[in-house]
Amino acid sequence: MNQLSSETFFSALPVFVDFEGVADAGNYRSLPTDWALATADIVDSTGAIEAGRYKAVNMAGASVISAILNALGKHDLPFVFGGDGALVAVPPSGIEKARAALSAVQKWVTEELQLTLRAALVPVTDVITAGLEVRVARFQVNPNISYAMFAGGGSSWAEARMKEGLFAVAPAPEGARPDLTGLSCRWNPIQSRHGDIVSIIAVPTGSGNNDAFQALISDVVALAGGEERGGHPVAAEGPQMGLSAAGLSAETKTAPKGKRLQHRLFILGQYLLLIWLHRLGLTLGSFDPRRYRREVAGNSDFRKFDDGLKMTIDVDPERLRLIEGRLEEAARAGVCRYGLHRQDSALMTCIVPTPLGPDHMHFIDGAAGGYAVAASRLKQQAVATPAVAAMP
Picture 1: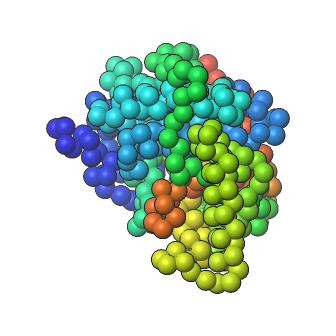
Picture 2: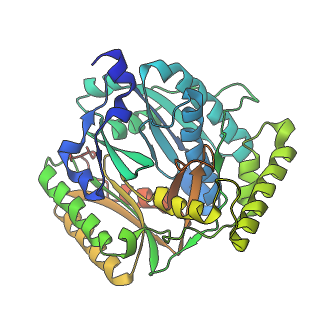
């Protein structure tokens, strides 16, 4: 693959528009070998969640994506938000910028959120040497937004090596700050409308029965798809506007220390203006707050494939019983391991390059632990053979 096609890999990928396509091998392409995987997560996120710091954990995870996208000046890179961490695939021209961003965001998370973020930058060539792949698909949520899906086992391998301390990126010196322009959290918790907000992670066991795992994914997606909007936690008209003290504090800390009061007032001013325009049914130039809310609902990332299925969905008790039964059947058959966590609401963390454009991105996680708690329950099902992602 030549340099030009390597650099433009993700934007040149064909898209699929039905989420069931995550189980179709034909939608995936191998990530170029000169790319790298930037991966990071919160150490002891379970403890932070037990202390009620859900918003800070999600903000830290999304900050990894925001910092790298801003550092590279691109918003069309393959990435995945994992609740308490994230993974971003970066092209060769952006590897050192990504390293600097990871370094700075670690220091920011430590000093401003009082959490510990570990990070690594893993060359794709090392993944391949280990006998795995990084395969990427491009799921088009709507004409304005596409999200990356990962398969082949490479992203899970990179995360595992990071947790072992390999390929580590050291934190920057004291006071270093990443560019987190656009990172925000200005929405109320999203209450379940049907029964439960359920965060689900299902990964293959490495038994080699890829067909059975693909069938499981198709079945779970189809079961969730029978719910309103496929189980989407956000209503079609968009989430309820709200600015919590925790959210305001976290977003204020994205600004340099000398400009925080100014940034805090700017956030409050923007929020109050949005509320005023929405209640009066007014627009401001090309900005229509009601259309923006609908775009937020349409652009939200509530389900993904990252070497396994991850979903945060709003489902009724009977549908949840069917989904859990199908997962349990597959677990007993040695096809998968899974973790599932119920809660009554979801949280949204956002990356908004500009509210005037339609390409703002919104990440959904459960409001009471979400993916982090589901992952801890998945680990309890761990078997001697480590999970290796089935190839969709």
